[in-house]
Length: 260
Image (cartoon, rainbow, N blue to C red):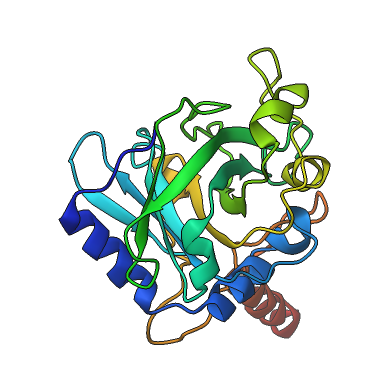
């Protein structure tokens, strides 16, 4: 179940998202190709805070869209909160999904999407204007699976989406996801359509991979106010060649020609 954040963590989560607007987050989803890879479109009405606690160091990690994390950072289930000026959401119950559209690798998504959590019955605990913690008292439909891309893979885009929960969700969800349902081959957009979840009201995402492959932070920054472009995602089997190598090769070729 999801428990409330400690007050200090709640403050940190709200501060981390304060720099971002819903438009920034929507643009980050587009830059990361999550629109259309995961969602056909995305127009959030709130900000979804995701906070991890590193299992080894105890440090808290505020996820801003596009942030790079290691598998060690995401071993433990995150805490989530919602910030919105839409007062009607204060009385809603929510469904949280976390999916990986890059399994087994971003260049080969034959196992995607991987369902890393599907939790229902989440309720705001606090003011949405200040960032309300989302808590529940029921087991997850699909419990948390920590991110662990294969060695050598580029970082994966782990995508958290928050939906308003329809009245019949709890009675109908087992037709689509239950204890025997594989976690791979999931499609969150199709699932949302089948169960009447509508469009997500908020979302967030991060990149995660093995430590050597997760060094470049691509999150939204306060100074730019816009999303950074994602790492290159090859569309063919061609290997990129550095411009430095090309330049050196041209110089060598020119010297040879002059000597001849």
